[in-house]
Length: 349
Image 1 (cartoon, rainbow, N blue to C red):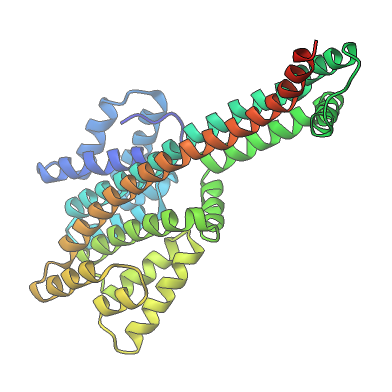
Image 2 (cartoon, rainbow, N blue to C red; image 1 turned 135 degrees about the vertical axis):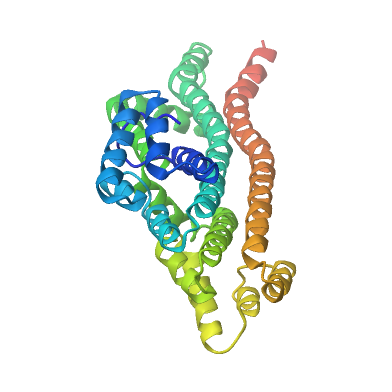
C-alpha cells in the first residue's frame, strides 16, 4: 500500500488498507500491532505519517475507528462500518467485505475511464485534422482556383471562412479548449466531479444504463456488508441511499423502500423497482430462507461487476467505428468539395 498524499484515499488505496488489516486481524494480530507493522513497511513518508497518526490514536483510545476518524482521509462509509465491526466483534470479516467492495468500485471507475479515453483521443485527433484542413489546406486550394480563373464552390468557401475566423480568434479558441480540458480533468480526478458526472449521466440515455448498472453493483455490495454486519434490509437500503451519487437510481431506491413499507418482501420490491432482475431477486428470496443473503448479494455484486465491464467493452466497440466513420466522412467531404471541381477544371485543359 502506498499513499502519495494525506487527502481522501482512492478506492484502490482503501481496498488495500482493508485487505491488509483483515489479514492481520485474521492472523490473530491486534489492531495496534498491525498498524505498527504496516508503518514499518511504509513505502513513503506520507504513508508512514498517516499510519503513525492512526497508531497514536489507537494507543490512546484502543479503537481503530477513532484512528481512522483522526486520519480524516478514509471514506465515511468505511469508517462507520469499522465502528460497527468493533462493536460486533466481526471487524476482520467486515474489513474483508469492504476490501471487495472498494476493489469493485475501483474496477468500475477504471473501466469507465478506459471506455472514455480512447474515443476521446480519437475525437481530438480527427477534430485537429479537420481544423488544419479548413485553416491551412483550403486557403491553398483557393489560391490554386484563383490562378485558374475560377473559385471554389460555396460550401468550400463557407468552410474556409470558418477557418479564417478560427485563425483570427485562435487565442480565444485555445482558451476554450484549455477550459474544456480542465473540466474533463475535474470530472475524472475529483470526488465532486465524479458526483456531478453521475448526476448528469443519469439523465443522458447513452450513459443511463451504465450509470444504473454501476449503482446496482455498488448497491449489492453495500447491502451484503450491511446485512453481514447485522443491519436489516431496510437499514441497509437507507444507508446506501445516503451514499448513492446517482439521482436516477435513488428514485428506484425510494420506490423500493415504499414497496417494502407497503408489505412487499425485499426480493419483490427489488424486482418491482427495477433494481435487480427476476432471477437475482429469486436467488435472494431463496437465500433469505437459508440465511445466506449476505453471500448471495456479494455474488450478485461480483456478477454485476463483470456484466458492467462487458457492457462497457461492447459500448466502446460500437462507439469507436461510429466515431471513425463520422469524422472520416466529414474529412472526405471537405477534401472532395475542392478536389472534384479542381479535377474537372484540370481535365478541361
